[in-house]
Length: 598
Image 1 (tube, rainbow, N blue to C red):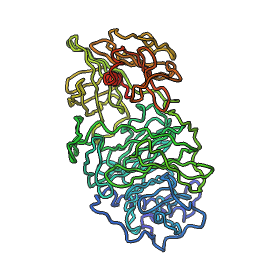
Image 2: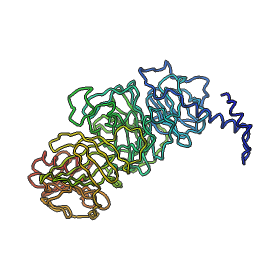
Image 3: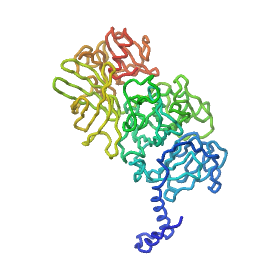
Image 4: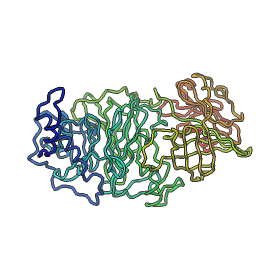
């Protein structure tokens, strides 16, 4: 690249630095700075109207071949060091990017990089037609055209509002991150929880997903959104599950915990209710209404994947296969019978289909995990960010038991002129272009949502919340934070009609109580009285539960008691009346009212 005349003029006029620097070094830095500024121009973010697969995935012969043994002979995982899309695979070494045709038995070639980032890359993510890379300062750079002829690959440092034209961004600290793209060209449609398809827009949906330090928070950054950390997805178990790694592809997010428990979720800004400016959503049942119906809310929940019957590591990967956002291939590094390789399954397959092992002979790169066969997802989980809010009006009292900015729904207990009812408040952030802080502060956080009544009817509402006040717009109800409650002891007794100090039949405006050390006692309130009590705290639960199966992972374990099971482990114990236990549908309804989903 020709060095601009202004660089030479700056060299002549600048005073000598305190530490001598050779002219070639200074010129090199000037060239690098100019190339950074030039990266504002790119095709990244421009709509792709049609597929443009190259005639060949051979890279230009002028690109230098990598020395033998410098890079892995195969790429099976999408990580920050190696990754792939449908046509190409990529790898990093010493800050430089290498590529070759997907699965091709050819040499790796070094991809020419702008001087701004050449030799400075520390991580990559590839999906669809786009590649993102971080430099040593974690600044984000995007390469567009990753499904086209390599001669058309081009780079930008742009990021942020408006429409991917922002000044750029440095990714905050994350234990793991991944790049995911879903597009009209490659995917065609989303398939929502009701089974209906909605066309993906021309501009794609692209996110960086980050697993934040501690493993419980999952932040996403979209190149069209403000340069902040305020958008998050609720993690498994309402953000209490601790993950050690994260992967993403085609809007499917995949996490794994330190004991081999795994969860997946199809989730992105447009599909999950944030973008009401450009899409139509509905909490009403959309099943059977056909493609093009309003997108079904709430968004698809986390799905727990079956445990793997073998040795596994923390290295995981997910990539899209097929169209309509249905099929995604999950991979987990591991070994079987002394052979190394990876375990694989389709996210759309039933749990009973399990995992298939593929031997590769490649060395293991991740940390070997403790992987018991049973469900251990609750082990070592963190504290919930749920908070309790109260409202006292003219003849109406209401309690939001577990409101959480990022985890919906919240249970709401209402006493309206002496008549009690339980409702759910569903909420989700909206589209905004202004930078704001995470969670709640003194600036109102605006959300859209719906109030779900006892009969399953939904009433749209807005939610405006600060640290001091939460307003439900549909009813003009103003909530304030409830005084901190003293948690129940870590260990306690489950009686025939009681859990700890709470008993069936007692009046209560509260339906959830914390337990020291984690877990909760929850209640189903019917006409103002406790009709069912349940506990999830380990100090209250038996290690084993023997009794008659009631179906739906429920087991009757004695007079008035039922245990909720998962993977042979007791998840919760509930106490209720004999009449409720004798009617399975009523039992499940009251368990759901207590916040449990057997």
